[in-house]
Length: 117
Image (tube, rainbow, N blue to C red):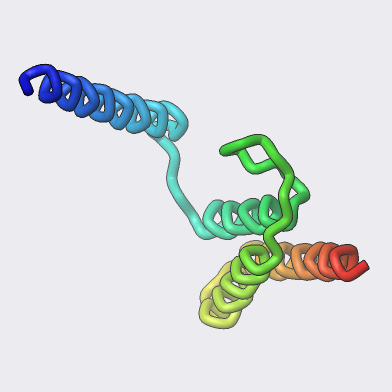
């Protein structure tokens, strides 16, 4: 019975070590002086949509795979943000958001057409 417990404890130790390693990786990726802003936020969402459209490899497995429902959801979220932030964005932010949405919508339409054929 003690042997089982040691195996279980060993598993817990390994899981805790992996969790700590992941936290350290995340800390290393984000510079200390980094300031999150609206442009960074929307471009991050746009990148997720691009991955979901299969245009860019997924960083988790380095594979290009289209997931149109996910892409549409993210594009719709960006569109909602555009609606809800109207009048509260700088000209530069508004232009970037509009261009991102338009480009993603065109990519989505092309991807959806390709999938139909």
